[in-house]
Image 1 (cartoon, rainbow, N blue to C red):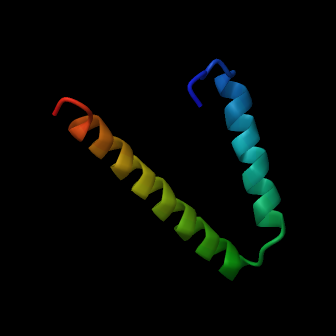
Image 2: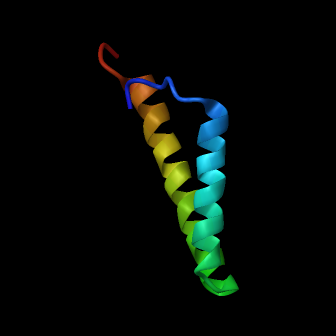
Image 3: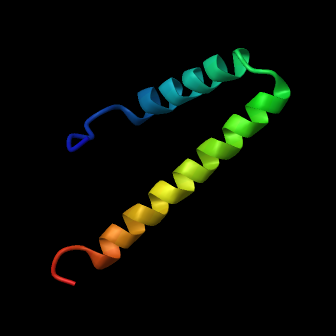
Length: 59
């Protein structure tokens, strides 16, 4: 993902469409679990990115 030349509106539309598609196939209990898992995944990726930025090459 080195080239981030995509349209931000297209990206948000794609994410929204994906969320609606996932939610459509799940009951409320499973949807809550998937949402919690994806939040944890996002938080963990953010932590890794912050650590890489802080502890990157030359530090």
